[in-house]
Length: 112
Image (cartoon, rainbow, N blue to C red; front, side):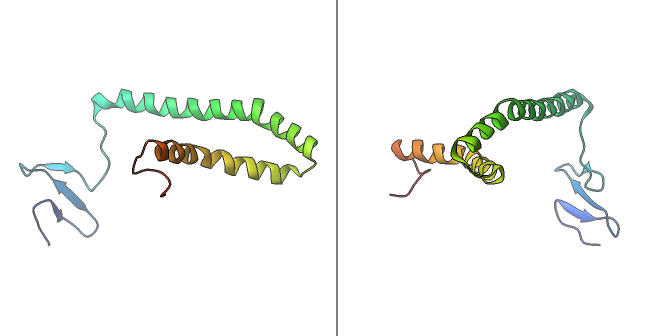
């Protein structure tokens, strides 16, 4: 049995984290949610579900029709246009952050 100041092995596959006073913080390295924090956890899960639902509605109502107009106007395939816009949309926040940080003389951004 190996023992140090924060972790010790109590069995073959059980690891227990102990606090400063020697009390057990977690049983078998299982995540613990306090009863007083459970309401926040439920609210957090609801908000995540709500954001995914909102994203699905926005994509169905606005992104797909705009993509269809773009495909009809420029005569390219729907797969190519979808992949291009999804890639551009995923990297735009990083691009805007880098451009703004460049003009703010920050350590974040393009190296000049």
